[in-house]
Image 1 (cartoon, rainbow, N blue to C red):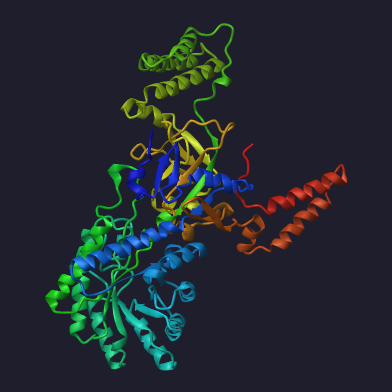
Image 2 (cartoon, rainbow, N blue to C red):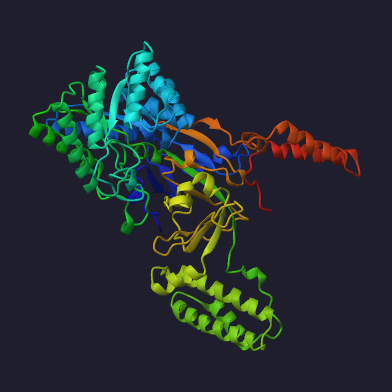
Length: 609
């Protein structure tokens, strides 16, 4: 059997029982049973499942570890957290975040005008809102309106020009001035794909000289009391904790210096996001070298140590880790539509009355292969194949003989794999790479897994069932887009093995896990495939409830979303059919009905037959 690295990436959220993957929570439903229940209603294409309890688990984990570190280190400040909306703005994700985080005072972070409006409408009063990214006068004014409305909002300035705009808005309107934060440009940088978020060449933040100028501006405008936070961010998906420790020392000393310079209302350090999620399924390629416990302990200890040395009161600590909160809550599930098998089915064998002697020998090897002789017969078959190919090149056997030989040899290889279960040996690994199976999945990688396509970010993938059977087929996954990049190729360093299934007899489902962060918001409509059908699954002690169904856009809505008039399109299609020649009126009527049905469906495939 193969547990697909469940013990590495799943954080004990899923378990395997009776050959199926199940939620490790309360009534423990199987993912397959949930999918089958949804598909009873003729739902086709990929399906996204949301599990709010996993968001609650992550929020609880984050707060509990920081609370633990605060108590152990006798730290005098508080812990707060906000969710960065850029990670996932979809309604039922945000609803789950705000509902599950309400008891903790969990807030939201916005990086655009639209996200700020969303944060203002969704955040519970009292929970923090932080605003990052570049901002114009309108966005600053929205921040003032939020403060006037009673929100605990902090506008983080990314440059001196933004501070000047805040001052301008404050002088022009009689609205409550929001809290002001300064994003500091640290010398320290992170590691990994997103390391450029930190360091002196980072896109955001004020240098030491600019920070001093900002202090002068605020003091001159009698607004120094509004400066409450400094903020830094050294990158998403931090693989190594050492750069964070360096950044904490640097930012902690900046905070202490500002307090000594008269920033009396300064009371918070926002360490940004970056808490990593484990995506890999293989022990040799883990995504991070630290635990949440170590992360929280390091943050609290280092900030406390610096403040004690500088004789400065301990600040409140803010984090903006979004990936950690939502990645695990969403699972993408898609059926396999077709296997582009290379070891052609034995039903395609077509022997002659008299066959070449080597072909007869292959027939014997295939028929009599067993546990004891499998390796020997496999080697013989490979040798015979080479000889038969030479005979074909010399014109001594024909194309049908060659086809029969290929089918038999591939069949022998597959039987040997099953009998020996020895695909970990170098010889079998090479054979698997050469004979890898292509699984066509009813999904778009560009739409649902854009970070795989754009950044080579791997996601855990495994079947929902047959998990009590050893998977032996080296697998590449092809999506249904008209693009050769729509493929998750077989990687011998991070191999994916799947089952040899007969799709004429049963459906075979694959699950892609930890897809709740960024994938939905970054997903592109390549080939006009759009967000899949989604469902929220709430699990109790005895069963589960499927709710919050959001249907994938139908074809006409897809076209309308990029600027077409769907009424014009449908009328033109109907007109062309009505004036065309049909043998009977019934035939015309039936064809029009089919057309109307098809355009009201989503763009994913419904059948490959």
